[in-house]
Image 1 (cartoon, rainbow, N blue to C red):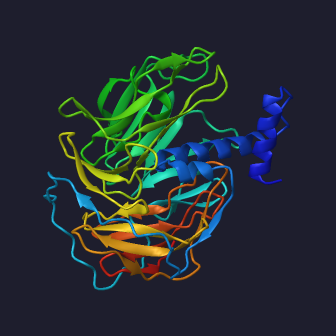
Image 2 (tube, helix red, strand yellow):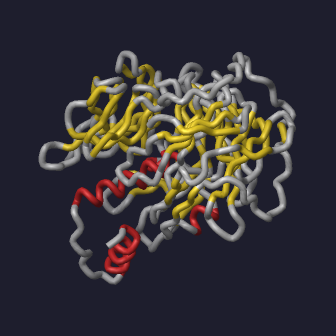
Image 3 (tube, rainbow, N blue to C red):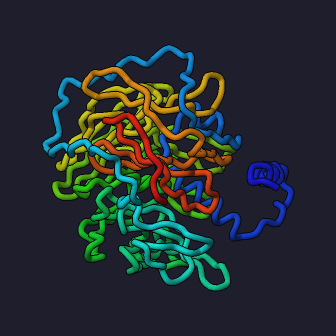
Length: 423
């Protein structure tokens, strides 16, 4: 029985007030964790929601441009300014070695490696930037710890009482989360809550603030290399039947802890309403993965073309450009956008294009054919693109159901080609 049929059956049984069929707890946990991780990394939209209940496998093949009319060229904002960082030179040869950005990987069931060293214990990797990671910890009988576990290298840290997601900065220096301020597990209220930014080099909290107005399920969406946190700000707080804080409407804000500044991001938050008494599902129209450390791809409404926005070190949000709808990544040097070329009348990605952000026209990116498999679950698909340095983007294989998602392609958008790399 596949996951789609299993979940559909259980939902129908629930709404018909029939006892749900027995499902192994481990399977439920893994599916739930995959959904939570995917919500953190995806920009939701009409197309994604339309296919959310269907299993689709997309193979990247060269050629096959769609018949749809081309998107307009990117429209820079009036106050767009160049970054003050130096642009990395274009590599003469695209490096084929492992990605340093993905320093931890899943190498088997409950088995993780960090920097080539096996992490003692039983783990399932959630997210990673360089050698900083978050994961679920399981005891010898398969029971999953309710705490957040994170680590730097093979040094592990346990954080009880977390709720609302966790974010790691692109350089691995910062990690942010929301947790119950009193910590603990069963019997401890889920509030009051606190938003914390931790320095991963010391493991100590560097900044914190009250999280009473933070939307619980979209609490920590991103943290920049400057320590600025992107989070969901609750506009209509409520409680579920168990007395746990929930939210019926939200906006996206940035908190700059060095200055205390809070600024709103021009990204809508869609609201999914179920039967009376159920919790509203909040989906921010914002994409974090595949962006530079302080960049976001946002939409002000479903169906809108995305805007690339930049958060500076003081927390100011700048709209840089409006981009084509099929934009999936921006390089670290902000010189190129990676576009997915979808086949007409299908959900298959036929190839890629590189769009110069200085006003040039998109051109095809040469990639090995039939290498990547991008699969959607009955929930939103995980996001396969990871920005490295300069104009390099790594693409992961999401067809691996174990959650290891190994990197298999490295693309230089300046050279408009991709190569296979070591996982």
